[in-house]
Image (tube, rainbow, N blue to C red):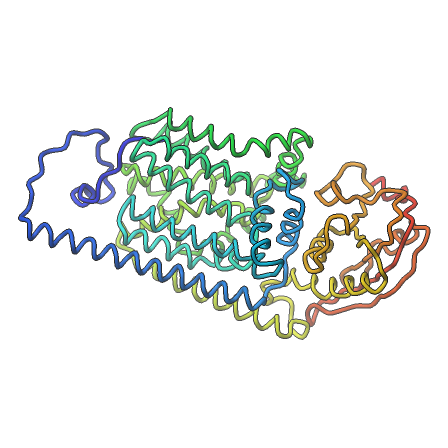
Length: 539
């Protein structure tokens, strides 16, 4: 981690583009220009910087307002993940089976302020992406110039994946906002050497890790930079950052230790689902998907710039950005080939990666490609928003293939029926073998953890729902058993009702989510659970 000071604005103007400068080099006496001419140049530079700053602020705030308006229209149904994170927030803890506690706490804060609405559920996501763009501007201005900061903020904001992510609450936006802030404090610490900046960097890393453990890739990259690329090193400052990060993360580590390191084990299993090694098709899908996540221009620019080391290897600023992005991206590409990787797992690499690519494109005089990034992202966002609106208006009459949110259309028609039957029959608990539908119905119906039960015949819990709401023999609560299946299949219908002393079918039928996709459902009122069938307990 570098402690040496970055060049001043004047020093950068005198240096060659991309030059690294010399840490601690003596400064030659500078000849002062005539006051009027020097003052004029300073005023012009400040005026240009203000214009770039105003343009960046206008773009970030304008897009944020648009995204908030789109979210207010509720064109996108609730996603299982965000419903599950909302459910986590109903019982705040220092950890959960599959995730650290940060996202649940963020959602709880937002919904405590504005209520359990879809708009408030997704507000933190839209705000987080605006914060990331603003920090990218600040980083670009601090490391290079205000023009670089503007294009970095605009290119990131226009990324297709960012537009979609701002419509759905997930672990990535808060973690990536913390990543961006940690980068900013790291640069400040490298310039000033102040322990307060190192401590702030550590706090940002700790908070980001509480949202998603991928955050730990940033300090790993920072260590690589310190060992192999830094102009100078401040190990005392790095120790302060590490200590603060560990202190912030410590409660989650304690929770994991008390719960058999459930989250850590789940993350490892998620990365290696036991489907064999060496998957070129999955690798190709992951690689191709990255063009949509960050946009084709930026993704290609990152790859080409990484290959052309000679263009930037001498610039400590570019090396810092490279170490903050390329190792994670490379690691996810390897993981995608070795086992599997979700498209969003590489997303944090694009925080520093965006600035890395933008600066390289500006250095080679390729600003037209940055305009292309913005144009492509704008068209992609318009297409997604338009399709979301069309399918929200009349999804069941349209084909599933062109629906960007096709997997999310099941929750509302299914939960509407289930919640209505639950109220009509006086059932105190909703029972299902599918935690996805339970999470969605929890959010849509405002149900608490004590109002759901999960059919979980295996002795070891497979998810957080099974950990805290497992149906156990002898349970005498009056429950609404909800069954559903794609097409005419109805998993569980043959065994689950018969496991209760009393079982009565109250509703069944089918509903369409699209013109070419329908689901069957059955709702039972059950009471007196007598135990799991032997076949289910064998898995």
